[in-house]
Image (tube, rainbow, N blue to C red; front, top):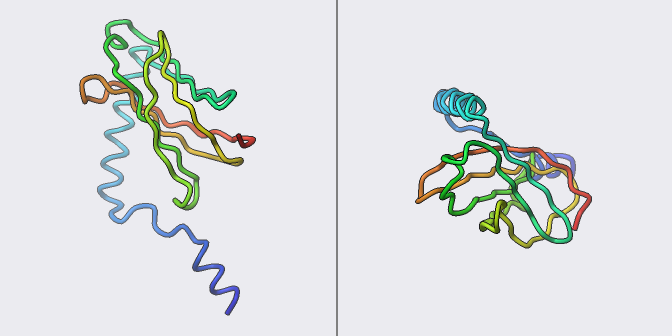
Length: 130
């Protein structure tokens, strides 16, 4: 009984309720990612001293006017520790204070200009905990 309880309480479950729709989304997102790569867009996320920093590189006409970056942090398995934050522009980067538990994370970063998505990046990181 104990093993059945542990298995059911720790299993992450289905990642997608509709695999057909998920595959269509994946193909669309992959095409957008290839387009952003051709344009030379890329980002770099760092975390030091309790501060998240995200620096974007790419054509100035694309980067101009980006209001903020929305970051969603989630564990590869489970959603109990998931959280989101907004990184605001500070000169040529986007910053926000925060803390990050030790272990693996997937970070979804969305650069937003006037409510529209300009660039999206998903990055896997491993935190030492802070």
